[in-house]
Length: 154
Image 1 (tube, rainbow, N blue to C red):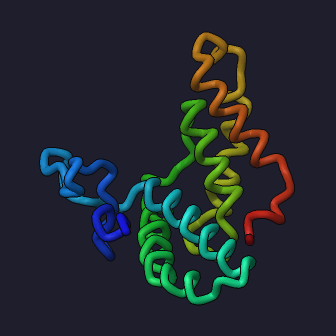
Image 2: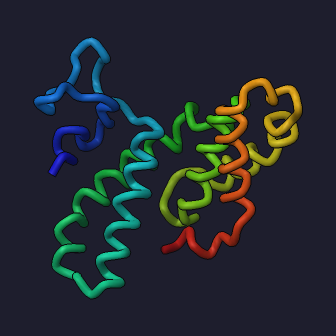
């Protein structure tokens, strides 16, 4: 799988690779980032889907990757970098992250949710109408975050 090329356990995630799956050195070393959060969410969803389909052995095959991404995601979420964004697109992506992370996944999810709520009035204001792509990201995030949180534990 590609997991081993993108991650360095305990350190972080390479956000971009060369076509031969080697790191692009000028981009610097891997580090905890929001890529780890989305990777963890995706891996966890795949594992849970495999379990739901009764494919326990396949789910167990990715268990180590899920755990490695959980550790990296929690490391980033606990850092000072995981703060609510005032950029509409970043805010929308963070709403999606907060929606899909269960409270017990690690990291200060509740703090982020409070911060996202505090800046929502500014992010979703008419001043961003000239930035349709960024505003569209915010609207998707707002829609996801306002839906039932019951899917976050799946």
